[in-house]
Image (tube, rainbow over all chains, first blue to last red; front, side, top):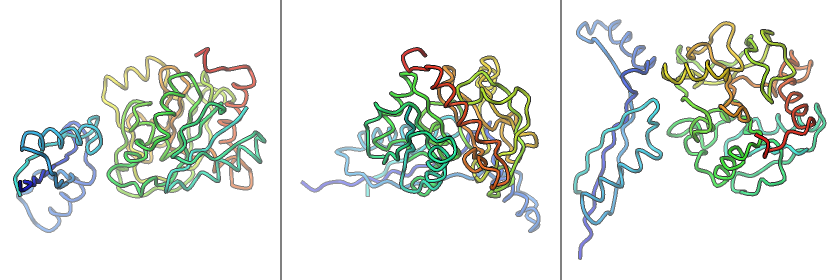
Amino acid sequence: MIAVMYEAQVKITLKKTVADPQGLTVKHALEALNFKDVSGVRMGKFITLQLNSKDKGTAEAEAGGMCQKLLANPIIEDFSLEVKEI
Amino acid sequence: MKFGVVVFPGSNCDRDCFHVVKEVIKQPVEYIWHKSTQLDHFDCIIIPGGFSYGDYLRCGAIARFSPIMDSIIKFANDGGLVIGICNGFQVLLEAGLLPGAMLRNKNLHFICKYVDLKVEATASPFSSQYKKGQVVRIPIAHNEGNYYIDDKGLAELKKNDQIIFRYADNPNGAVDDIAGIVNKKRNVLGMMPHPERSSEIELGSEDGVYVFKSIVKTLTLGFSRSKV
């Protein structure tokens, strides 16, 4: 049997209720560069995980567990993830 | 009475804490490597400042899962005294021993300077040797000291008198000027400022030594884990 590999792409962002001074500073920099359309910038993290789970559902559950336990801090961050075969 | 100073890979205030306990307040002290799980003979655990695991992912997030942490959580739940300073505070937040989380400083700078703190509560094992309302000079040195807690959590902290230190002039954007808090049982303290760097007059201030003296007083008075 050939093992199917999965890749989970995890996006971690500060909750909307949490101030993001880094995003705000980048927004100001963009405005200073005359990008007039920018009305908001939020910074976050992007993590890719290679998983050798037995199926996609398991890969999603595993990655979700990793986010909850370690990768994101639920007090200040939200996460979303997408799993695909590779 | 025995103090233990936890050492993670990347801790860098461990020696300062060890020095203050051994040479300034003259109490027995040992280093505890983070892979140890044996804490039974300690009365107070100090989680020092530094950059545990390079501050990777989030400050304190990896250290929180070091082998020693389960023992520290048990030690704290049994009522043992635990103090986390700077990165140690971040570890305690990540471990859930204290409420809230740390964000990057509002001005995005690493801030390293003496600050004035107001002592907000003296009814704790860590602050009994201060006077309520006293202003003390203790230095900060951090990039992520912008304490965050939601409104409900903040109301809880206030209701239970858990805020021990506030910044006189907020340097980092922390909610409600919070610099140091205790848990509800009052046996775990987290503070961003470094009392170990201000425990001898040669360093510009000895205002921080009273944190350590308060702990000694508490333990001398027969504080025992089972009574909490």
